[in-house]
Structure formats: C-alpha cells, structure tokens
Image 1: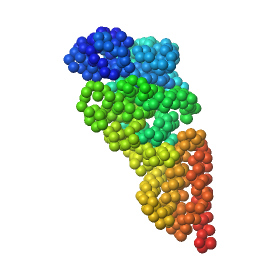
Image 2: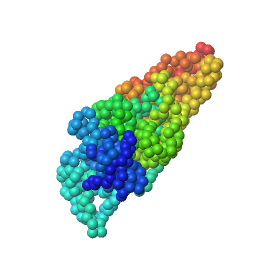
Image 3: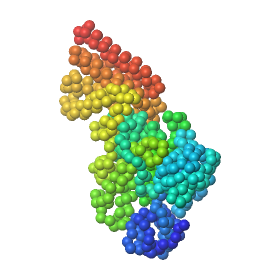
Image 4: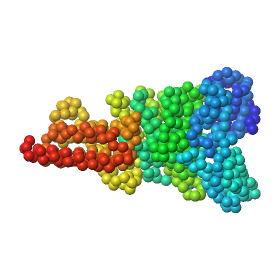
Length: 594
C-alpha cells in the first residue's frame, strides 16, 4: 500500500527532488506526481530524496506528492513471461496497446503476468517433506518449448505443510504452505525479485560447452561458451543488429532474452515483427515460445534504458535457476551508458572520460559479472547458464572510446566488426585479425567429443593462413602478387577461399543462414586439405598457376550454399573430388613435363 512521504521541490528532465522523504531507502520504488509516474530513489540527503523517473516528466510541478512503496524496483517472475514483449520496467506492451492504443501514455499500468490465466499445475513433492530455497516443487507447461519449474523462493525454507492437488490454477492462487519455526508462509506460482541484486546460487562452474550459433566465424574461430560474456562493437552500417538477430534466432540456448536498449525504432520494429514469425530451428515451433523481448527504443524515456538491462538479466537469472541455458542479447550497452551519463549530468556529478561518470566501469562489471554457468540452489541438483552478449555502438567506430575499452576489460570474447569489411559486402563483418575468444581451450574437449578430434588443428591452421595473408598484403601492395614465392601465392589463394567460402555467410540465404557444427568442420577440413595437398604438389614441382586454374576452386567457395545441413555427407564426396583433381594436375604436369 503506497503512502504519502513528501512533495516535489525541483524537477529537471527525468530527475526529481522531493523533501519530507525521511525513512525512504536507496533504490526504493516511488510513485511521482498526480499521475503516479514510476521512479526510483538514487540519492538521499537528509530528508531530501533524489529520484530518477522512468517516464516523461513533462508537466510535473513543485508541490505535487511523492508516494513511497517500501520496496525496491523489482520484477515479477512466474509463468507467462515467455513470449511477452515488455518495456524497460516490465510493463507488457501488447496489453497496454490493447488498453490505450498504439500511442503509449505515461502513467499507464498493466500486470506483468496474466493474472487471470489458469495454468495446469503438476506437483512434484508431497506435503510433509522439508524444503529448502530453490527446491522445485511443481511444474507448469508455459509454452510448447519451455516447462516452467516453480521453485521455493530464495528466502524461504521449512516443512511443506500443505500442497494443492494437480489442477488448474492462476499465478495468484496459493499452491503450497511452508512452515518454519511456527510461521506459515504461503507460496504462489510467482515471486518478486529486486532487479539490482543478483539471484543467489551455490557455486560458479567453468564454462565448458560452446553456445552454438550457426555462424561459422563465431563457432569455429571465436567461439562463445555457455555462461560466457562477449562484446560486439561496430560502427554504423557494420551489420551489428543483423548479427545479433542471427545469434538470438539460431543459438542453441533454451531461453533467449533480447533487450533493445535505446536502439532506433525501425530496428526494434523489425525484431518485433520478425521474431513472432520465425520458427525454432531445433523443434519447428514458433521462436517466441522460448523468447522474451524487452523493447526500449530511443524515443522512449532515456532513463528507462538503464532499468531495461537489469530487468532483462534478472528474468534470465530466474530461468537459469530452473536449469536452463539462457542467452541475453543487449543491443546496445552504449545507449545504456548514455542514460547513466545523462543522469550523472543532471546530478552535477564530476564527469570523467568523455563526460561519463567515474563509476561507469563498475556498472559495466556488475552487469557482465551476472553471467556464468552455475550450480543452482535447491533440489534436484541442476546446472544452468546465463550468457551475455552486449553490442557496443562506438561513435565513428572508435574502439578507444570509454564504453568499448571498459567493456573489453570484463568480457572474454571480442567480435570486432570492421567498417572496411562491411563496405566490401563481407558479412558477418567480424575482423578475424583483431577478434579473439578466451574460450577456445575450455570448449576444445566438447568439439573433440561431439564433432572431431582434429577440430583444433584445422582451426589453428586456418588462423595461421589468414594471419600470414595479412602479413603478405603489404608486399603484394608494393610489388604485386607475382613477386611472391609459389608457396606464398598458395597462402593468398587459400586465404581467399577461407574468406569467401567459409567466413562469409548470407543471413538471408535459406541454406547458408545456419551452419551446423558438422557442416562447419567438414567445410573447413575440405579447404585445409586442399591447401595441404596443393602445398605438397608445389614442393614436387607443380607450378602454382596450374593449381589456380582449376575450375573446382570456384565451386569450393560456393559449396556452403549448395549442400544443406542434413546432407553433409556430400561435402566428404566433394572433398575427394578436390583432392583427385589436384592429383590429376600433378600427373598431367609429370606426363607433359611442364
């Protein structure tokens, strides 16, 4: 029940000062003005509270009331989250659109969960057993892809005194009663959690399983591990948003949370239109049955961007605690940082680099540190993972600006998008020279066990060829390609095949949009085996121009678009054809004596 605590004395943009607020706490949720706008206390000076308001404050006047709620900014966690589209403070946009139309009005309220919908409840434990925080006591089929596991809240433990039988219930119904030291606690299907406090777990585990995205340059060269962190910085036009759409659509995470944080409205509209139409590649069911969208576009209140990041990662931790692999895609953290900078400016705080506050690095660290693969609380024993991929939009593509440089301190994967690659129509425009992944060693065993033990050797050899090509570019620029030795000419040819036949990938091609790990390895093996065999032939006296003239080389660069993922055995046959043509070239040279 909200209670009048004070009155507004000053307002500047999204920041409001109110006096008479003695007793409120930091980060307490408040309702501001006659329209009850949602705000959060960010500083306390005596009985004066400084509040950041998550809605437009136009028309707010000194003298209007401020109402304290007594609780922090929190999200409601329970069945009905999946498939929803929220704003930055968990207001369901589709429900609000039905209520007030397409133009969002401030002060509008809507329940974050469908309170009146009945869910089929299936109990997993019986009354009389002892329960601890995090124990799974029942299941609800939330969507065709996700089974929602109802857990004992983290601050509850004791003896399960009552448990309702299997049946249809709403999230507001009491499904169990836990007794602890004479106190009875009602358990419902939902729980609330403050967005700025990480949810607890037993221990953090090493990320050893890759997050398969179906994008070759990522999975093979710069892999992401489940529970890992990545940054995707790139200037305007480098294909950052399309790459993130691909990862969100095709990754093998069980739950995907896409946060559109301060992006342009047309980009977020594309997500809102595209995702409900897509099919999950692993089950064929609608993709929204495992996706939550958080839309906070650039024309919405700027400070709500700051809350949207925390809202998204808290929802992700909830599904991680159920034992699921969860992916959070944040596009983009630069806009989030700009919101922090604006509030710091309104509070007249001392600016640091480029006007950002000095605590920007700690805020970034707090966000990325919530990723990880963990052993969850409660029984049965289960592990879950939370992977965070944050896009960064550096002005002018300058990777030395503060948000990019500080982000790179806290992530272990860097996919640097290159403007020159994008302008030459090479997509994804991930620069293979500057990008890196710290998970190659930790996930190698998974590739050895599930794909092929030679994966690391082929991957490293391809990286050496691409690095050598980069070194030779200056020689070619000054002296021309013909000045290179025969073996170096072959390096340049193989690097071109790798670039066009492996690294480039068409997100809009029906076959090439997603590449399975088996297909990735066989494509790479074919290219590297071509290089090895051609190198042997050059050592035995075959002129390089005879190898370059082989017509099969052009097909080698197109085979990725010809063979679908369920017919990878054809790549093995094609590889044999490539090797046979090379050997036939040697026989021809030896016979003719050229």
